[in-house]
Amino acid sequence: MRTLLVLGAALLSLGAAAPPAPASASAPLPALMADTGGGSQLITAEAADTGATTGTLTWWDRRGGRWVRAGSAPARFGAGGLVEGKERRQGTNTTPTGLHRLPYAFGNEPPPPGTAYRYARVTEDSWWCQDNDSRAYNRWVEGLPDDCRADEAEHLASYRTQYAHALVIGFNYRRPVRGRGAGIFLHVNGSGATAGCVSVPADAMRAVLAWADPARRPHIAVGTRGGPTAITRY
Image 1 (cartoon, rainbow, N blue to C red):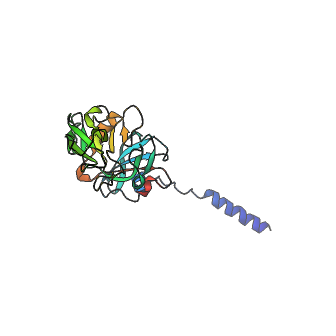
Image 2: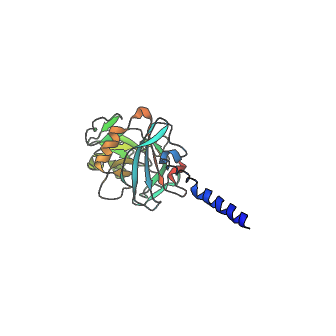
Image 3: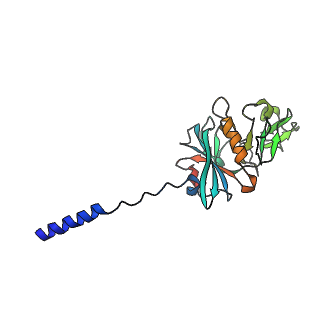
């Protein structure tokens, strides 16, 4: 019995002396995602859940095989929260989740210094057509076409604050599905939640445009921390 007690004490002593396992550093968010678009830049816009109207926008660089945070800012989402992009319906004030391209930038103000994206300046004739019956659905137009009603389009010059600087989010853009939604942008904050876009403070929007390099194929991933719309699914 004494031998067993001594052996047990020795084993306990060895266990106590063993060094603890090193804690692994938490992986950056893009490293946990199923897809980042294949480029070396990425923007993530993450909310706590689908009912949230606020969250965090982070922009990332891939360097030496690792994702590194380049900057972050508080973000706002649609007044109706977030919804899976494929299930979204126009007019619901929801921000579509998913991984999206960023076709080009635009604004009421000149492009920030360092902007590499193609940048379209807004004029008094600039509209974004959201008319489901129009051939110009979900497209920028200079002057309203006959088949795009003014009450079904957004006059870009009327939003001087929000569209001082913006990036087009390629949701429902390449092959538009009627009724799914149009005019989803990353833009400057207004007075509150958006109608479905993602918005950030003005200085953050300028920083994103100065950072983004179309040659590095940046995308934007929009989603939640968990559940069916988790950002890591995209």
